[in-house]
Length: 442
Ligand SMILES: Cc1ncc(COP(=O)(O)O)c(C=O)c1O
Image (cartoon, rainbow, N blue to C red):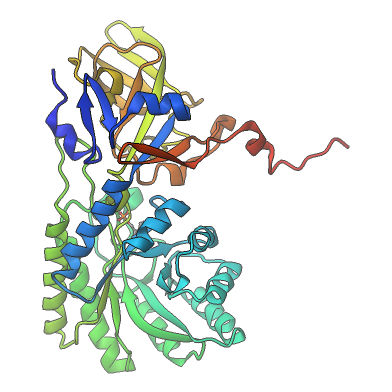
């Protein structure tokens, strides 16, 4: 059977099949693992850049005062921060570590937004000192701490309040963030959000310029964005009249879906943009608000499709009438998502890309947890040890959640473009594992 064309939507757009073998950006995927080792993560630069341009076009054509800021928790490296910078995309960070990587790439701090529900004092100080563009304040503790830090630095830090609008976006329970019973944000319904606005208006070290919410991830339904806009923009109007708030910026967050499975397309980015912008304009008008500057924060949808994970097949176990396990040389240490929240993936054997599927197998990782399975019931051609399996849509939340479980070595990462591969992260070594172990015999 030829390569199922439905795969085209979930592999990078530079992917093709030549003589039965899968190529990304003109490079043979199995050869890449021979050159750089296995497992290997491949990021397609064309896919990344095109995706960013499509995002900017979708939003800016409908509302020019929109800025796309990339939620870098999905995947961050100096390579990635540099591409975002070159493509005119801002950066959301959630830790001192993410800020450090962004700065090391030369990303301007002024175009970074700092999120998170429990930022440490040290992280806030680092961000203020670096001249961070916005801090998205999540709670009273942070507000008070930031005021002291900014005043001590002789600065007035622009802030945006993260609110909890009480909107259920019907995502997986572990990735929903807009509901009342949630660790993120100041709830509107309890009066906490209004109290924070009033407090911020009194503090000399912060300049409250906007409001933010993020509903969860991924949202396949579009309606929750309008529900959130309705609640948030009515609240904004209330705060403008009651507390004289200077409402200049607004963000309904990210959460845009990516297509992981051949039979489960995600809404096109233009549908999200149309829904969000039209609802935003309508809700501003309803509340007599001059439309503020808008931020949207895609994470997953800017990187998922650009990343492909490559694994080499090892052991096989067949239990008649029950299951066939095909074990690979990676698993939950580089991709915790299936174990964490039942994430689903497709698989292609890259050196048999045009062969008929002949069996249903479970692709098992190599780590010591029976839940370490990347795909249950994958339809594959007959695989042999040494074959290479690609899992597309591996660009988001895989590597950034990777661990050294079982003292495993985090894989190498290469960026590919126009027939050339560039190492952007070397594979870890045993020396790396021991680099932070400071024990000495007594
Ligand atoms: C505040 C905020 N913005 C944006 C995102 C990005 O979400 P996604 O990757 O689903 O676009 C997240 C994800 O957790 C987030 O917490």
